[in-house]
Length: 194
Image (cartoon, rainbow, N blue to C red; front, side, top):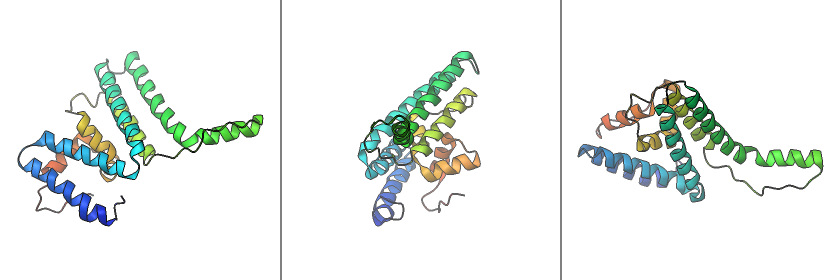
């Protein structure tokens, strides 16, 4: 489903927004977060449901690593090790999907072997969501996530939302603030991100 497709513009987007704003209007904020998270997963899974588990595992892994890092003494050896483990796992995943065949082709050329990883399809937006999650781990390391009410639903929304995520990266707005901004928008107003 593309952003400019009829199914997105006239089906998915209106249904998602109507239910989201209805839930927030009745004060069902947790339900609205769950709805927006589920809708985001449905949108991502529409492209290729086989990569949805990778996204979910990545989100859960990074959320938990961020919690461990935030619970450690700021900039301690433990926090530092946890940060580098989190970054290494993220970079390992992205490296596999982006560079495994390149690496094997290079080895095959140099050593005259015939190693093959098969056809590896690059998951949609893997670079974006991987580097967004690495930024979250760095925020946790710096102690910037301690004062916030950052939960897995809010984090998932921020990671999966391309436009909102790009907006948050370019303007310095944190993911927990994005959700608060969305809740403040009234149905009668037009929401046009900067």
